[in-house]
Image 1 (tube, rainbow, N blue to C red):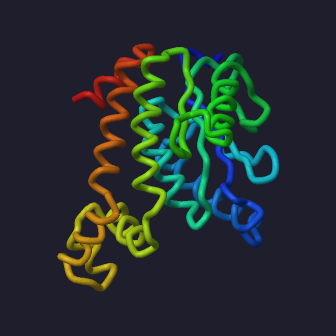
Image 2 (cartoon, helix red, strand yellow; image 1 turned 180 degrees about the horizontal axis):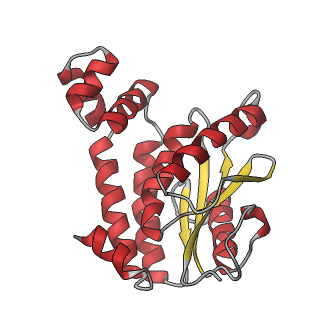
Length: 226
């Protein structure tokens, strides 16, 4: 039986009707993301398309959610996503397909993504929203991501390419070599692409989640707080 609380992600495609060949493109990118995120132990179950351009998954750990949100945006581009995250219990066994599961975590994720569509999540446009039983956490997380989305949403393809190169190598000089540019050019692209802000957001939000939801396994808490 599933114990504790889980992070459910529900995502859909922004302006889906204007994306040619969306269904095949989305299926292809989700297959790749599933392989990658399962191998990295970021998700508990494979991504499952639920209806049209919407898909769902469950994060392997709550603290993995911030990195998972960013990596979904990175891997699925040029597709742009709204993402709703629900944090709560899921009754029963966690087994695929994810779209056959239910419970409070799924209900909260549905509320979150609907708020991104309606514009109720903020007084400004945002594409990521959190919902949980911890309203103080929700306020902090939604403010952080309201600002964070403003940085990520307007990245150029050149900046994304620099981020891709750095993420896979974790060194600016190696990223520069892969891109066939100078180290200073690669560093400038990462800075202009707000990558260091993005990394700080991921790290800080993971720690905020650990403190807001103390029901995580102690070993996981210790490994991330250390």
